[in-house]
Length: 186
Image (cartoon, rainbow, N blue to C red; front, side, top):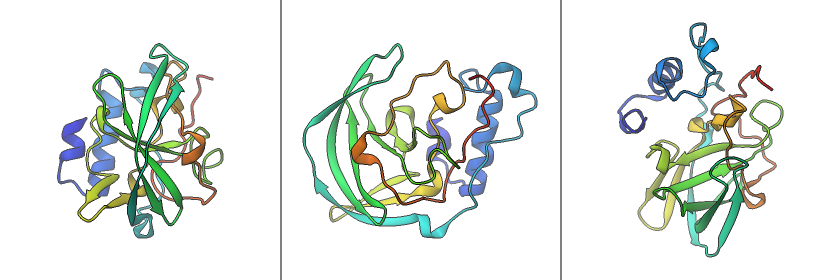
């Protein structure tokens, strides 16, 4: 997965390659019986307005989020807050299984066009480097919501995923990134 995120593919190529990973990777969240007929994930069209730069301000404190699954309660440390046009978004550091930057968010499309629990902009512990979030010089960050993706639990109920905490819920609909997966398993 990390190789895909670090590749020089454009958004269209990235999405095609990600679909292929979902189709063939042994750890794909797609149910095995769905893989042969899988034609790809559904996405909003590329949206240049979904790429923004935002200033960062310091943040502190931790949050414990129950994954609802075998990982149990996972602790997250606030790293910074990005003041985006959509609203403030906290950037988190996962204090478990290797750490990593994590930005879950729930926007105005969640529950209608996107997974109701929210989507992820980046989860570096899972190898999603530099696509949805790039740290820039001068205390700024570049966010590309075209790379928003649903957590595995949106595709398969046997997965448990941390959802966006209240401080990462914005009312603005972000019409970019992955759309809801038409799940059949519950």
